[in-house]
Every structure is written in C-alpha cells, then in structure tokens.
Length: 137
Image (cartoon, rainbow, N blue to C red; front, side):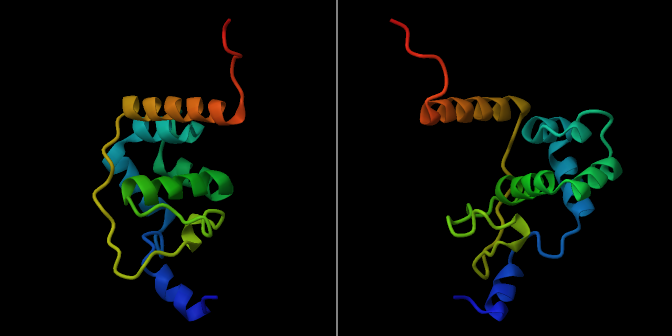
C-alpha cells in the first residue's frame, strides 16, 4: 500500500496536477481546434458557438464530461502511458505516473482519423457484446 507522501510525490508528475480547466481547454483548442474536439468529445458546448468560458462552465458542472476531456488531454495530447487496471476507475486528476516520466508530442489527429477510430471501436464493441445483426445465410 502506498503512503500519502508517496502518492503526492507521484501525483506531482501528473500533467493535470495544478492545471486549471480553462488552461487545459485553451491548450487543446489552440492545438486541435474546436472541430476536432467536437468530433472526439461530442459535447454540444464544443459544437454550437463554442467559447472557452461556456465550455469551462459546462465542464465544471458535468463531472463525466470533465473526466472525458482530462483523459483526452492525458492520453492523446500529452500521450502519457495508459492507466493500469488498478487506476482505471480513479479520476484522471488522481492518477499517478512514475517520477521523471515526460509527456510526449501531442497525437496528430484529424476529424477523419477520429471518425475512423470511433467506427473501429464501435465494431469491436458489437463483436464483443454479441450486438449487431445476425450473420446472413
């Protein structure tokens, strides 16, 4: 079991540690733009007349949406290693990363690449869950 001191030291290596939601969103918009964020997140606030202020207001009120954006920031923008099975259910801001681990260059994304990835994930989900159409005879 990890002590609180050890967890705090590891937490300081989390790119979200001490990062304001507004700053994170501004970095993402500056790098990717609203279209890519809208396609990836599917939040109405990123689609209909998006502004940093209105999006931050929504994200502060909506925990699941904020966590989805934080995951995007960690794993697509900062390209940190995926959460372990142990940390998967912990909110992104509480996850730990090994000391000295540096973020990588942001993932290159396009609206088309995101849509292709989402379609691939949906197909895999249907296969795993047995959903979808029965095979033709």
